[in-house]
Length: 587
Image (cartoon, rainbow, N blue to C red; front, side, top):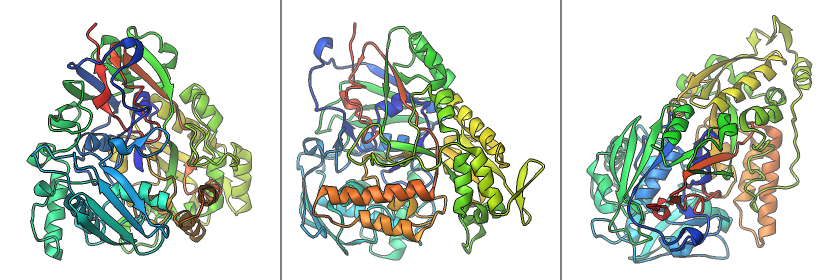
C-alpha cells in the first residue's frame, strides 16, 4: 500500500496508475480501429499539483512512501509480481513464473523466469532477491540509521514473521514463515516486498552486511543515494525504462531500456512534468504541451473544451481519509502529538463526533461533481472487487447535532463557540495537501461542519511532500489524501496494527483491531472463510474510526487523440502505470 495524494485532482493518475506494474487487459500488439502501434515519439505526462518525485531506491522509508515515487521505481526495477486489473497475478509478465505455497501456509517457493537481466548484462537471480531481503531486515530494525526504517515493516509478516529466505538455485528461492499465514495474503502483502535489486551495484560494502557496522554503513549509503537520481547505481536496471534526467519541480525524463526482456516500449521518450497547480496543468493541456493529463474536478464542466483530447472517468482501489494524531506515551517528545491532543483524539466518542461533522454528500457534490464515493470503510464499491463487503452500513452519517450532543454527554460544554473541558479545548489545526481546489472545498466543508459542533479547526495548506514528512509533534490533523492499496491484500497490518510502524503514523492502537487483523492473516481452507475474516476487520474499521472517512473522488483523464493505450492499460487494482504499452500515432 502507498500514500496517495488526494487527487482526485489527478484523474489520469488515478485512471492509469499502478504501484505494482500491471495492466488493465491482456497485452496486445494491435489496438482495433486505431491500427498498429507505431514506435517513436515523446509523450509528456502531468504529475499532480506540487508533486515532486524524491526517492528513487525501490525500498522506501515512511516519509517518502508515495504512489508517484513507486511509479518511477517500477519503471526502472521490475517488481517480482505483475497484477492484472482484477487482482489476479499475470505470471507471463512477472519475474516470478510460479509460486508454490504449502498447505500449512508456512512455506512459499518462488520460481523465477530466467529471461530477465540487468542492463549491465548480469541475469536477475535469486541472489539479488536475497540481497533485497538482507536490506529489508536491516532497514526495518529499530537501530536503522536515518532516513530509515523501511515503510513495509509490519506489513505482510515482513520482516519479523519470516524464519528464513534461501536460494534453491540461480532462479528459485523459498521463504519460510515462523507461523502459518493466509497464503493469498502473504503473496500479496509479503512476497511483493521481494523486488529483486542488482546486488552487483547496490552491495556497496560487499561482504559486510553480516555485521552491524557493515549494515549500518550500507543503509547510510543507500539512504544518501535514495534521493539522488544522478547516482550511477540507477543506471543498472531491469525495467522497461531508464532515468535520463531529473530536475525537481520541473521534469523527469525517461528513455527505453534497450536490455529490457519484457515488452519493449513504443515511445522514444517519456517525460513526467511537474505542475504548480491544477489550473497550470489544465492550461498545458489546452496548449498541447502535455499529451497525457487529468482534468481537475473543479473544471469538470469544461471537460469538452479541450480540443483534440479524449475524456474518461475511472476509479482506483484505495480510499481517502483525514487522520488525527493519537501518538502518546513515547519517551521522545518528538514522537508524541503536540499540545496534548492525543488525550482528546484517543477517545472514540471524539472521533465519532468528528465523523458526524463531515458532510460527505455535500463534499462529493461540491468537490467531485457527485462522481465520488461516499465512504463507509476502507475497501470501496468502485472498482468492484471480491474484497468489498456489500453488507457494510454507514455508521456515522452527517449529523452535527448528534455529534455535538455526544460531546456534551461526555462533559464538554460550549464556551464562545468552542467546546471545552478540564482546561482542554476542541481547537485544532488541520494540515492539508495544497494545489487542488477540490481539496480546499473538502477541508472547508469539514471546517464548517465541525464548527456546528463547537469544534474549531484552523486550515493550513502544505505541499504533499511536506505533509508526509511532518514528525508527530508537528501536526494535529492531516488531510494528505489517502491510501492506494497498490495491489496489496486490503487488510490493516501496516495501517492500524502497530502505532508508529508502517503507515500507522496517526498512532492508533486497539487490541480488538489487532486481533481482527491477525485473523485476516491466518490460513483458511476456502476463499469464503478468508473473506469472512477480512469483512469482520473492515466492519470494525468502520465502527472504531482509526481514520476519518471523506469522499473518494473519481479520476478524470484527458489524453491527446493521437495517444493510445493509456486507458486500455490502466489498472484500478494496483494504481500503477505500464507506459511501455503507450504509443503515439503520427497523424
